[in-house]
Length: 298
Image (cartoon, rainbow, N blue to C red; front, side, top):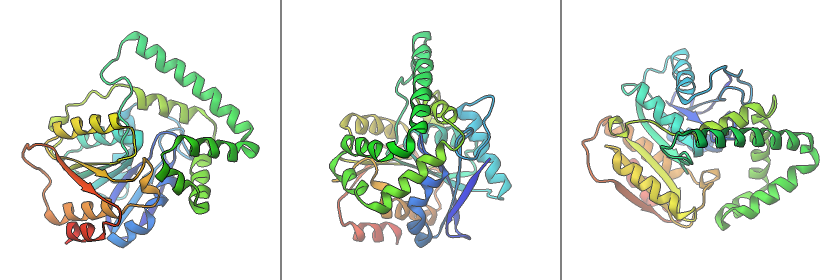
């Protein structure tokens, strides 16, 4: 199992769960703010991704076991989970397996399973076909990656909302994104394709049993239906909160993470690991919200 550390060496540990198609190096986007707010980021590659060996069985439960093994190895009795994109399912399963150890879950631009609760034969066939197609596509890109990287980034840029395109135009972010992607496929396309298929599988979990604070952040420029889905999930969670970031896109965390760590710090200072059932809380953040961040952290 490969992992990397970022942030404050002696800070409160946040186990980092990367997005589908990404790698442990993604956590570097949070390096500066994590150190500033006093958090230690522990980011691990999932099986077959980056430098982690593949598993014969690859499920959310086995991935959660890896996270808990890493926490044991590093003597982290209590920790939070910071997760991006499609890794949210693994994060929630981990929280359900160790509810007394997970202090909070922080989900950024969370992408829920495509098929929801559907697990029939047709859906399984679609996932298998998708995995085969994706593996072939990624393998072809690997063969052409030296000449195809800029073309891929340009296509990615065109598919993003305006705030994300602005971020991608930053050379340092572009180079960092390339490093993250190439690390994910260090040993081929199999791990990435299996990871993508896992992200599509139904999430069978009783969310009402997750008593720790669970926060979701979503940019207002993302697809509106995603906001509705996350609002519904946050409403079911006993301590769920949805933060909608005005004028930001899916990849707001490439540059804007102040709110996330301010909320995490506030949760630590409150010392509340369980919250009674209440209507979903939703907070609006606008551009230039330093005052709000200070208020949450005080």
